[in-house]
Image (cartoon, rainbow, N blue to C red):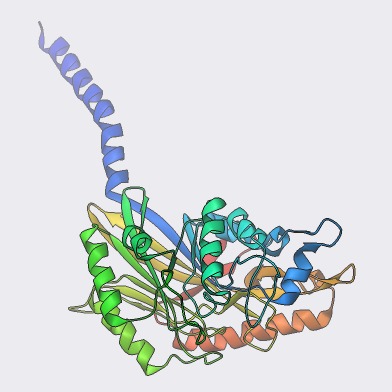
Length: 384
């Protein structure tokens, strides 16, 4: 064989080897660096006006799908969406405040909108006592929405908590607790998770033993209508992060509070604390209670390690126009509608939304750390 033919065969072999290995290299690169987006949604309430708005008064059925129609594209863009479900599904009579019981159709609409997981430990969990807690659990199970925070008995809690979520070879532990249940005693054997350091510490250790890559605590805490978290909250958040918790997500105040992404601090693990997401949907119309935020966290895998790679928020506002003599409810992504005055039936509603946006940005832009707002560019959502 002459030198020319040998060189040609050697060159061909090298090209074939490169072509063969390139897909493998691409697959390995993809596996070594993958992203997963998590979306956290605040208080889903069920006031009387919301129940009446959803009712078909002739058929006596309920449909809440339109409530989420404008926000659904943002929710479904995330890989996993979580929300605080602050009502019971205890059956009729359906009532709002102070003892909530909504039609199961509210939860169905949450599922249809792209919400994947609900947390149910909050100060209204026991509004309809033991039967209400059990029926809420059973109804959520029947429509296929995973949930945590309340349990039928200790055996169920032992087997179901922490909730372990597996997605793209990433293992996530979700835990949920509340400061209380408005003074209503939770009858045995049902369980509502209360905020207790020893209980939470044991559950975190259990999550670690279950080989959780990411640990999320959804806490119902704080002072209603206060935009500044209490020292007891900041102290608890620091304690939880010191135990290895990755994300602490807060609800209950019905107004927004600051969002902190601690990163690149020597000797400390990166972590996120969102003190209050505010209201997602409710009939509370006082300033600062008529909207809230959705927080989007991006996780990235590099080899076998997982880290928080991005953190941002969307402002949302509840639009309540009168249509065909009935009050309707629509959750709007604020940035998409803040320059669309023509969309609103009543100019006063547009002014109220603009006021909510202005107040929220004044608070969050000043107090947030490493969190930015998602702004609608006309086609895409971009970090501001």
